[in-house]
Length: 533
Image (cartoon, rainbow, N blue to C red; front, side, top):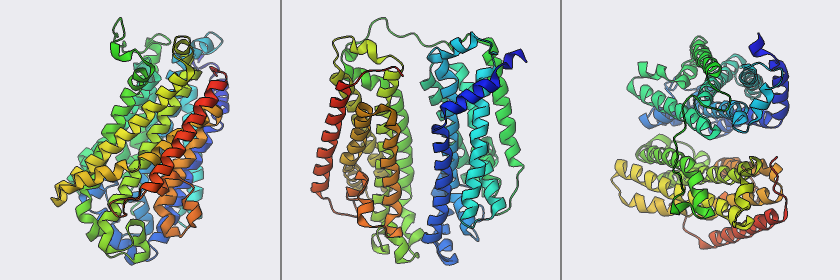
C-alpha cells in the first residue's frame, strides 16, 4: 500500500481546490436535465403533440444525432427526453470528467507540482487515485442531484435514477480514458484533445451503429455512449449495460496505473515531436504566435462544427413534415407557423452555431489566463512585446477564430441543405446569415477580455452570457418571457435570417459595444499586476 500513501489527504485537497468548479458542473447538468423536462412539458402538453414530434425523432438524421429511438413508436414525455436530449447531457458529463482528471494529473505534472508532492511522504499512485476518487465523488453527486431534480418534475424516480446513472457511467468511462491519455503525452492540452477525440469517435460510432439497424446494431455496442442509451430507460429499463461501462473504465484505469509505474514523472510515454531549432518568420509577432497556439483547438472546433452543420442542413427537407402538425404556440420556437417553418429552423441553427462560436471565443480568451498563471506570459512580456500587444493579439486571435467558425458552419449547413433540397442558393444565404451573428459573438469575446483584464479570478462568470442567452433565445418565445429578459444577451439582438430580414442597426451597436468592452479590458490589464497564481 506504499504506492497509495497519502491518497486521502490528496483527495481532501483536490476536493478543496474544486469546491466551486465541481458543484457548478454537477448542478449545471442536473439543472439542465430538469430544465429540459419542464420545457418539454410546456412544449408538448398532449400525447398528440409528442406523437407528432416523435415522427422526426425516428428519422435517420435524428437517430444519428440523438439516440436509437426506444419508445418512439408509442412515445411518452419521459422516453422523448431520454432519446432526444440525454445524449448531450452525457457528453457534458464526459467533458466534466475529462477536464477534471487531466487537471489533477497531467496538468499538475506539466506545472511541476506533482514532483514536489511526490518528494514528500506520498505514494506514486496517490495523485492518480485521488483524481479518480474525485471523479467518483462528482459523478455520485450528479446521480443524487440529477435524480432529485428530475423526479421533482414528476418523472418516475426509478427511471430518473437509471438515466442519471447512465450519465455517471459515461462520465467514469471518460475519466478513465483521460487518466490513460494523461500518461501518453507531456502536455495537458494534448491529453485533453486525445480524450476529446475518443469522445467524438464514440459519438460517431454510436450514431452510425444506430443507423445500421433499428434500436442499434452490433457496431453501436462498441461505443461507451451506447451502453448508457441501451439501458432503455423509461421504456424497458435494464441496468446490465452499465456493467460494460464499469468494466471498460476498470480496464482503462488499470492500463493507466501500469503506465504510471513505467514512466518518469513529468514525461509522457510518447516522446514529443522535436520542433525546429529556430522559429519561422511567421512567428515573429505576438498575433502569429497567438494564432499558432490556437491552431489545434481551432482545427478541432472547425471540424466539429462543420460536421454538425452538414447534419443540421440535412434535416431541412424533413423538418416541415416532422413538425407541421404541432400547434402554433409550439411552432413559435421555429417561426410561428408551418409556412415559414424551414426558414425558422435554419435561423435557429444559425443561433445555435453562434452560441457554440461564443463558447470557442471564451475558451480562446481564457488561454491568456492560462499563459499568465503558468508563468509563460512573463518571458514574452520581458521582450519588446507590450502588454497591450500581447493581450490584444490573444483577443484578436480568439475573435478571428470565432468568425472563421461561423463562416465554416454556415457553408457546411448550406451545403447540407442544398444536397437534400437541390436549392444551391442555401449556401450563400446561410453563409451570410451565420456571419451576421459576428457582432454578438464579438461582444461575448470582449466581455471575456474585460473580465481577464479587470477581474481574472471571476473570469468564469462570462459563461453566463452565452448560456443564458441561448436558453432564453431558444425557449423564451415559448415561455412568453418579457422582452427585457431576452434582451440581456447580445445573441438575442441578431435577426435570425433567413426567417427575419436583415437589420444593420443592432449589428453596428453590438460591434461598438464589443470595441468598448475590449478596450476597457486592455486598459485594465495594462494597469494590473501579472501574477502566476
